[in-house]
Structures are given as C-alpha cells and as structure tokens.
Length: 185
Image (cartoon, rainbow, N blue to C red):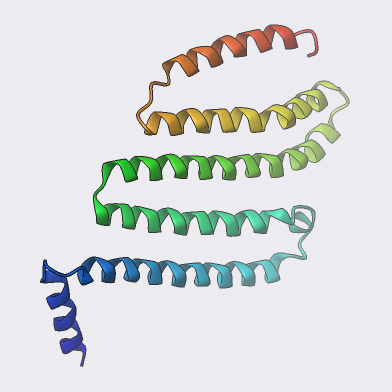
C-alpha cells in the first residue's frame, strides 16, 4: 500500500501538465502547520498548568500569552517560508519578509511592555533615587514608538525602498528630543 501511494504521489508531481503537484505540496505544508499549531498549544498549555502558581508567573501571567504568540508566529513564519520557497516569486518573498519583520516588531514590543513593570518593581524599588523611576517611565512611554519605528524602517528596507532619508530624519529627531529632554532628566 505504501509503495503504491508513493508511486501515485511521484506520478502526480512529475506530470507537468497537471496542477496536482503544487496543490499537494501546499496542502501538505498547511497540514504540517496545523499539526505544529496544535502540538504547540498542547505543550504550552501543559507548561502553563504546571507553572502558573509560581510567584513569577502569578505576577506576569501575560508571559504564557507571549509564549503562545511567539510559537504561533514561528509556525506562521516557517509556513510562509515554505510556501514562498515553493512558488519562487521574489516580490512575494519581499512582502512576506517585510510582514514578518512587522510581526516580530509586535512581539518585541510586547516583551518590552511585559518586562518594564518587572524591572520597575525589582530595580526601582531597591533604590532611593528618583532617576531610575523617571528613566523607566520614559522607557515605558517611548519604547513602543522606537521599536515600531525601527521595525517599519527595516520593513521598508526589505521592500527595497531607500531608507536613508528616514534614518537621517530619525537621527536629527533623536538629537532634538535629547536636547529637549535634558532638563527633564
């Protein structure tokens, strides 16, 4: 049975007149992605049940959400790479890479937003100065803007657009913000 199924598959893939070969490849990639999605949900669900009552995870319950989100994005990334490599279209590859940079930017922003309260509690509470409180507050306010701006510039670069004017403008804006914020700090 296994030999005949393999022969049937090879015959479908070798026949250049039919569309069955690429369709089978796409369906196989999507089935593997669905199985990986299901397995990641099961494994991370069991880990969450096991460790949810630990003090660190009680205070940072969004960490498991971020882990699931990261696993799902990784599966989407690998599935996208497999599909893009299957079709060999450079413009689709550029668009996919730019989209993935923006998704990774979103993950990075979520991680920073999750870690900042933890740093505020652990580091700022141990010192008597107000400087670290102010710096962590500024980091909380500007981290998203900085992360999304960097991700947008990288995505534009992957699309083939000239990003030199954006980088030059960002450096001038950074200098202006630095001079404006010196009195605040």
